[in-house]
Image (cartoon, rainbow, N blue to C red; front, side):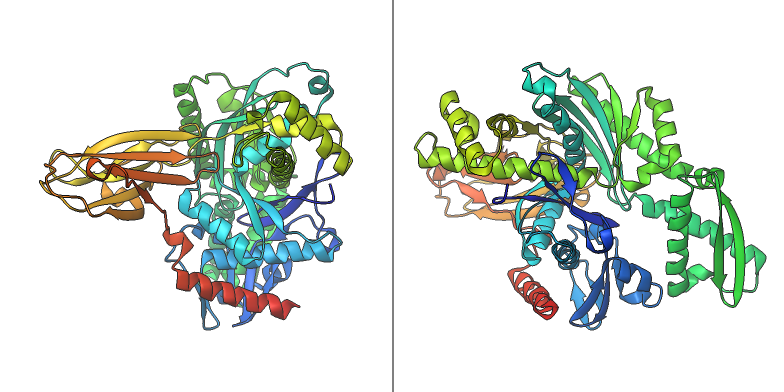
Length: 565
């Protein structure tokens, strides 16, 4: 396709990349300058209006450690966090936008066409605030974010779509359903997801994860070990981890050692600091001993997500798909095989997420054009899905689109018919008074509820003639639902006003939560005294910042883009 292309972007914690679907229907990573496939997700600020990204920023991090921002993805959704440097404060979406801008700019410099429409991946457990912050980052970068997709889902697509386009599918034979555990251990985050893979359908069953767990934690364990070895050899020397420049160098050394030990059993590591130098032998056994606790945390989360899948009737597991660069460590596959007793596959771990996002992007692009054709001919209403059309009308629209873009009608039809069924990543609810008169969280939508969701529940007013009712919408804050106010995040609030007098305490307030396939939450509240005036809660999260913050940061990023040329 030469028009309507939607690129897939893996906005990673440590590395990012961009992919597209070629004319043959295969996803491919767009090469960057120098032939690289990934860009380090690192920004080095060298002045109020100057910055460096990618590998140069990573290499120079040792010299200007205080001006380097890395692992920013762990801060997405934290509206109060700022990276302060060179007299300016940057939010997580603003820093991420610089990474995105560098990524698409580098791809264009290397020969790719201009990139505008994108699908950006996010960890499956990202909540509403984090997802909105990701969209905001794309907008700051001048991109049109068509959708966000969960990283494990994208990884499963990069595997599942191959079968959708296989000879078996073309011949009309249905591929056998199977259940996979997608184990995504990236540089800074960990996702684990149970998915059902079948002909033309990828269904997410259950998700879990930890946004503070990733390969960077393995690096820190190694760096701490190297520091201790150094201090044992030179007791009077300064601890390299107490010096920001030396600590940064030690972390980079630790990461290199970790990568080397994925391919060989032993390596040597050099540590230089405070006028001393030390060569430390380091083995794969040393690495696995130091980091066994981290690996066990991922296994515990894997058990949890499998237990959640069982409560939803999915009891089998056929294979494990390893995703994320850190899943290359041999201990990962070995431990999971021992724990789960199924085949463990390591397939394109660094690039699978971006490729899956590109496949989903092609689906969105083709689907958008087919829908426009059907709407223009009056065959479906605007806003309807393709399956709302008569089968013969949908087939004709697919043929027209295929002819226009040089594709096969079968490919267009298959792409439109593929379903991606997702689940809710966090629980959502409202604050209400419990039987003791204390405010607590009541969840209407629960993590791993299958999308789309529509839930209705009645609450009551607390006093006679109550003329105002405040609705507080909350999101699950931790790994489990908790009714305690301190354990949830208030993501929106709004008032039902103008309630006429005469209604006693306990008058019903009907709350409805709706969440579509995009994961965006809509809340309505209805008081029977205002039956024709339902309140619709517009979620304004802290991640989206204030309007003044948005304008200021968009202007700052725009100035940097103009300076780039």
